[in-house]
Length: 327
Image 1 (cartoon, helix red, strand yellow):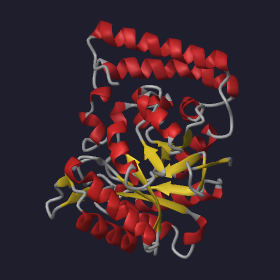
Image 2 (cartoon, one colour):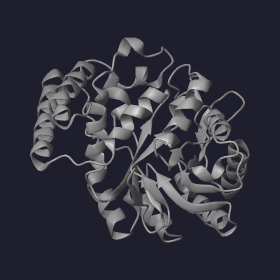
Image 3 (spheres, helix red, strand yellow):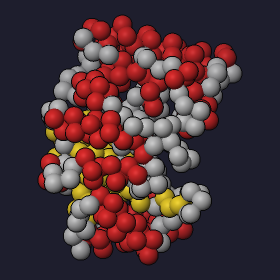
Image 4 (tube, helix red, strand yellow):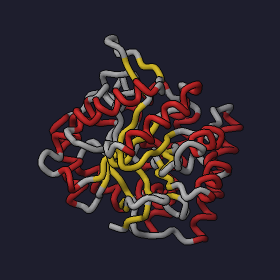
């Protein structure tokens, strides 16, 4: 699989990485319903067999469970995988989540992640959300010190806007930005991507398939009652049927390349040079076997224009229906 250099760092990431959000399980606020741990482990190992060289997880995914599964999947094989994880989201004994970026918290979270991952270093350690705005500088300084100590190779940020990144960049260079980025969520193409280009910051796109909506296979009836998507406007009417119709129209484009809409959606995010890689979440080997096919090819200009026209059609439909208009 093709690799791309992550910003100014020496990390070479495959164009598609394994996303470990869903495998955390369903017993937390942003879970995806019950998961099979053995299948999750098999999916991660299959990803590596297919050439994927990095996994993106976070302490908060399953309240630590996702990181523990990553450790189980690669016990004795740590050198085969680049591990990215995140801090700033903490929880109490009731599972209640809050944002925290104090120096003590970041250091404690890092030590806990190292223990759960059964490793002595984290390749890419990211601030998950800038919710604790008051302590962004303090938290980023803590990550810089962890890099000096060798516990972290590179430091990145997730869900940051330009203002947040400017504050961090004054303290220590940012290796990467991890934003939500898909055909249906393009806001970061402006100021955020421009800032990353100017500062040699790699972009790692999450939710390129928009949490399943762009696969062409999404069925709300198969979504667990405690899946976070049940609470999302994008998965409620009138948005749901319009989004599904849009994804259905992607089939005609995807089939020109002998691809699926999911693979087309991933390749679309990778069309920009500022994007280093895309995160493809998977819970079963068959899912990652499909989504790795989003790497290694290009959509031609005519079809990119056609996708833009379909996106305009979608917005018009949402406006007519009084639907939710995300940025």
